Length: 359
Image 1 (cartoon, rainbow, N blue to C red):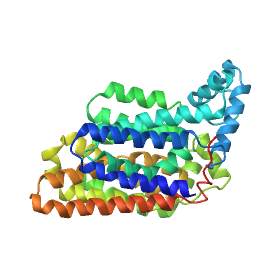
Image 2: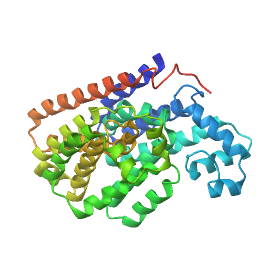
Image 3: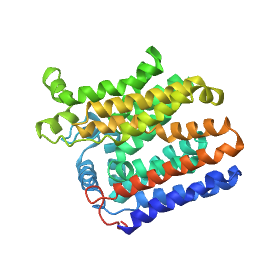
Image 4: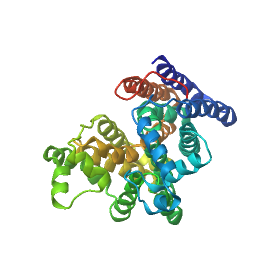
């Protein structure tokens, strides 16, 4: 398991490049780090993560389907057709499941890492947060969801920049890879209808209370659930989620409330409000369905905006205080980086990962 620890520690050490002023130097080392992460995910052997055996089964199933059966969805697996199409193409070309892993790793890397470098004022801090909180859970164990989550963040940014058509198109197209990206649509609706930040700050408390009543069972009994969720209820595979992302989201939202004017002086209002609402909804969903961990795919997608919200908060605060006071905020930023590194170490667990092997 030592390779996983080295990867997390390496990502934490790279944070020093956030203090380098030359953007070109930053880009060189950022690309090198992203390349290492992409190859680490794409070259892994089947069985290193929990879901790869299922992906191997889907790959074999796709190879046995006709193009018509695949297009019509005439197969027993609940995997979306877009991903099955990729498997069919690779299988038909006589290539292995490892090509699928690499293609998904490259696509996910391009989506996530380009967004981080383009949008984050501290890209290496954002990358460490990504590695600590998302990399092993997404890029290793849920490759379809990892890609959809990255696309979902792009769609949110496009929406906040008022590129509505492109944002909506991204969501619809990549729903054929993983349907979790559709959670961006309720975010869009919430942002368009209501933006009171104090209400959104308190919304997770409503989710916390509602979570004690196991609402997923109530929804299942009253109106039913999609097939992909129904089987988890019928098999009683509930699996409890965790409170960590909600606690962090609440702290970041509190920081936003306390530094609202500083943020608005540095960033567009739509962007600040959008990040705040995304964190609130992600925390709300996580707490409301805390007894049904599969729903964390939805909350984690929205919580992914913390990759940008936290660096934006650090940047806005540091830009509005005296130079001699910036040391304190830098220390706080580094402390959070240590927290992200610690969380990454905690994710290196046999329930998620097995000893790393190539191909």
